[in-house]
Length: 274
Ligand code: ATR
Image 1 (tube, helix red, strand yellow):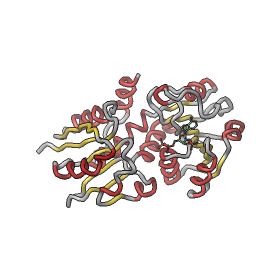
Image 2: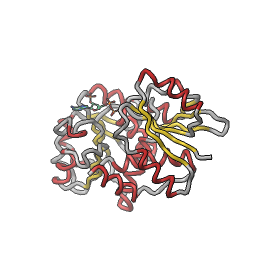
Image 3: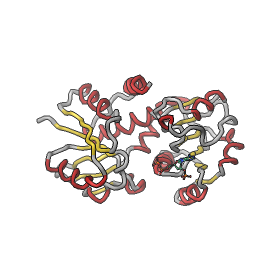
């Protein structure tokens, strides 16, 4: 029987997950499809119940439901507990719904694909201290990267996050700008630059080391003002398409056991956004 998967969000029309997963199902010769479902916050619990009733095999969760969904699942795994957010739901053989989070691990996979044999130099600067920063920071740390430094507009949030981690420190935005040259990797996780709505840069990257990797988790636009400035300063820049594709690939693997092609998919999504 044909299996079906979904993504729940509000809004949802802009999501590129259906295109991505449908292509992967085709490439893997799997008889399955993936549909976007618009769910408003007040309808989330009922939507989950309906997905159970209708036999949905698994789904992704996007804004604004990533935290709200936790109580409606049978279990959440360690990654989702640590991040207090779920982006992927899968079913066990006995029909239990498990919530997991592939966002942080997706970032690390995309970073490693981007860096290749050159590897990634320490230390790491993370700009931002919200949910995205948290997921990426824990995933980087468990993959062995560090020390980590956080710089955030609201310094107290960076301090709080760093206190929950090993080998993690806090810089003010000014300190981070001045000492940017010491970092091998800088990860921009704030919403500054997204969809051209929030103009500007969260910090000035002009002091970046020439061979450093500067990553932005935003992928629309493909190059934020921050990435453009970092490239002009000589950094190797990486946009958020890779993280988007790899978080999806990790979800796909949970559902099917197959890790799908990511390199061609990054090209496909880049063309769609650009
Ligand atoms: P997400 O889940 O996408 O990380 P979030 O948890 O709301 O969303 O976190 C948003 C992050 O972007 C925070 O680090 C926030 O900084 P504050 O903690 O100071 O709010 C950062 N951010 C959002 N708008 C910003 C802006 N205009 N300038 C600088 N930082 C901004």
